[in-house]
Image (tube, rainbow, N blue to C red; front, side, top):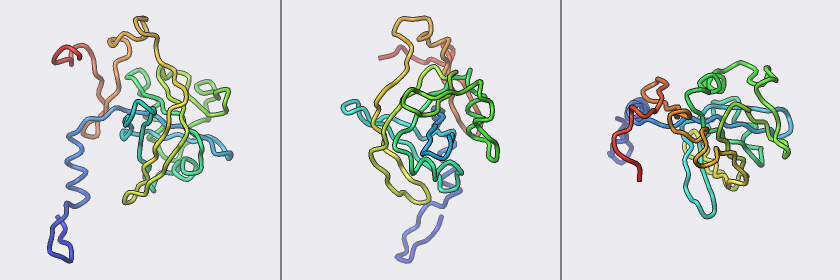
Length: 184
């Protein structure tokens, strides 16, 4: 805890991070190219905020080497990863590597954005707002296009897609065995 000038206490950064380690989050890989080469980063802060219009948000740390490009990019691709793409999550989370060195695992969409072909679900969107939030920036993105498995297809089977989740500094997978109740 930190005490402010007015005597109120504020949760310190380590306590705040410790609290959020208990909160699992889906894993996404975000890519963009603002004209000077593609960048990618792994994020657990992605969530939808509106279906009409279709909006999602995620945050960028000022410490990430990908942040300057993502801040200048007009469009991004948000890949929603499954356990089968743990290698992509690790790639986006590793600093100091060329995330696009292996040209066999990525391509460009017809609109020019870089994307990783193994991700079964991705959303291409236009950045519509940026908001400074502490040492991070929150980007709001309007979804323009998505690749999703066709409903009822084998690719849409939850057991095959098994979402990748990050919890307490460890990668996890959701599966039929982790289901507690029927869906709504």
